[in-house]
Image 1 (spheres, rainbow, N blue to C red):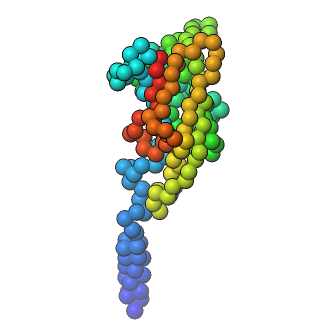
Image 2: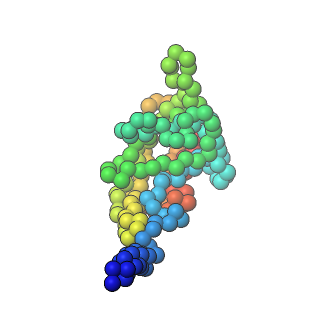
Image 3: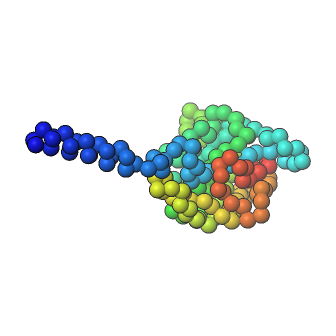
Length: 177
């Protein structure tokens, strides 16, 4: 009887563990979670042309984000024709400073033209699955540019009226410079 007890208990534990898991107990990497806002830059001189235009030495810095506040991949060392901006999931607005022509001099002076954009939205929690939990989508997304007297961002245009950010693959805003 003792041998039977040592065999049956581990077998039961294994069976319960193995057969109790469901398909959605693991969140697949291909499952969409909270999306970033996709912004593409275009030439203001040719607004009808749908060819993206690079912003030279683009640096994107979050305002009110924890250190370091430079968005990874947009540190001012290269040109970029698009940017993926994470939006806050705990507030109804996010603010970024976008530098065009960013350069940090040896003495610590920053060169370039910074424009501050304010992004406002309404957050909505959507259930994805038991394993993935909830994701946040953003509705009524609006971008405004603070006027500092030397704006390099000339025009901001939403792709749709009442713009939503639900899928990262969609272009949400066009910025003309």
